[in-house]
Length: 429
Image (spheres, helix red, strand yellow):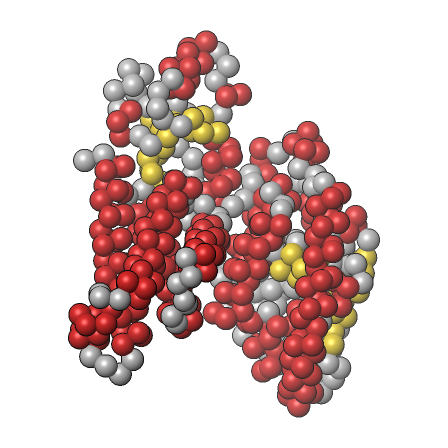
């Protein structure tokens, strides 16, 4: 059985099981304290309006799976965000359809419960699909299989010269600049004339890993990665609006944190530190103090796991990233964006621009409170880890968009609730 047939079978099985679960949830919530089986038999099935309301969620589940099946052929960095966007769109369409057909919204609780259930089901389905039936990507004979950290849930297979193993392959990854001689270009032409998609190898690896390879960069590529002035302006306006809208709620949260810091240890509530910002200009970054007073009297250094310089409240603030909250003031002042590469300390920055190629390119955009590198890699505890983390910053700059910012904010919220994605126990931030 081919990969596509296996995936279709898995999708149908999950839809069948998900439909049963969705129907049961609606029936149980609508029946209230009554026997739900009797409710289905005597009240739900004979009532066309109630039945249409319940069955509409089964339709959304099937539509969400079908749409995501087409747009999520490969696992990628924004998979969960795409699923949420698809389900939101379908639920908006359902709401408009119910209003047009004058079918009442029988239960807001069911509406919310079904939204959450369908997002969960579709996410689980595609996680299972990519894990159980990984995409098989073909490579040109003579090409090497890429070494990618954290198994990206794809399988690499060298295409045979006689193309006899194409039935096992879901797509072809190739870098055209590497195959300019006639023999390989002829093979690429043959592959392009098959039904298999021909994928750019570098772009595919970037999408699977969420980072750029520093060894493959050139000054010409960096020039093409510059974000447009209109996007920079749109981000600035959006950030100001977000801070103003959240201001009242954040004000009370700030007061609570300030009291806890003051009660926990002696010293100021806020901590100011020089950081490198937009176009290399320095600014004073604000944070809630999470260390004892005088922690950096002997110079800047990485904070080790269980560092005795960190206060009790400080550990909680660092784990949930709430120590970054005062930086919303930096956002209002124009020093930072809500989303962007984290601003480096001047001491580390002056060192890294001489040891890490293109490191100063990070300053082409405003630094952020949260960023793609922060949620994808976490804290860096050495120059080598900073180099790896820098690849994620470059990926963000190259793909910077309002959509990617939304993905990062969703993942950041997950970090705040469940803690760091990658807790390596160190920090220079």
